[in-house]
Length: 211
Ligand code: SF4
Image (cartoon, rainbow, N blue to C red; front, side, top):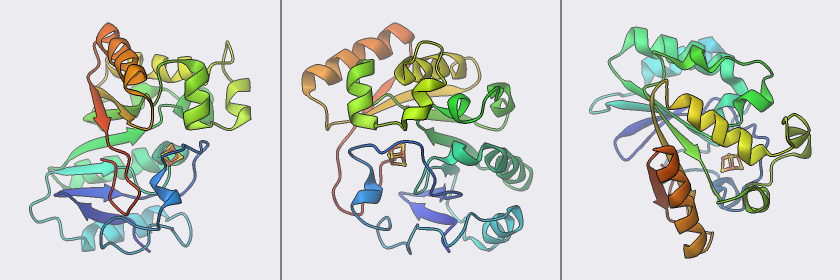
C-alpha cells in the first residue's frame, strides 16, 4: 500500500482515496499511479500506526518538502492529516504543503482552520474556474456540499477558505488549463484581487502528477 511516494524531489502523502468532487481533469481517471510509483489506490484508509511506520521506512534523502496530496482529497481525513503533520514536524525538518480543494469546512462542519497554523507551511488551493457556474461544471462537487453553503455556492466557500488561509500560511491558487484562456485570465484577476498567486497547470492524460 503506497502511503508515501516521491515525485520531483518531494515526498507526497496519500492518506485517503476519498473525495467529494469529481473534477473533469482528475488524474485518477487516467491511471492508478504517478510515474513509476506503485498503485495509489489504497487497500484501506491507513491507520496512524501504518502512516508512521511507512514514514520511518521511507527514504527521505534529498527531500525537503512533504505534500499532502495523493489520490484523493487529503482533508476528507482532516484529523488524521493534522496528526500526521504533527508527527512529521516533530520527527523531521520537512516543510509541509497541503494541496486541497478548499472545501474542508463543508465536509467537516465547524472545523477550525487555525488548527493548520504552525503545521501547514503552505497551501495550494484548486480555484479551477472563474465563477460559481463554471466551478460546478469543472469540479462537479457532490450536491450535498451546496446544501451546506450559506448561499448555495461551493465556489464562494472555497474562496472564503483561501482568504482565511492567507492569514495562516503561504497560500496559492491553481487552475488546470482545461478551461479557456479567457477564463484563465478571469481567474488571474480573482487571484490578483485577493493577493493570492495563481499557478496554471497543464492538463495531463498520462501518469504524471499535478503538483
Ligand atoms: S478534488 Fe482532487 S482528487 Fe478530488 S476529483 Fe478533484 S482532482 Fe480528483
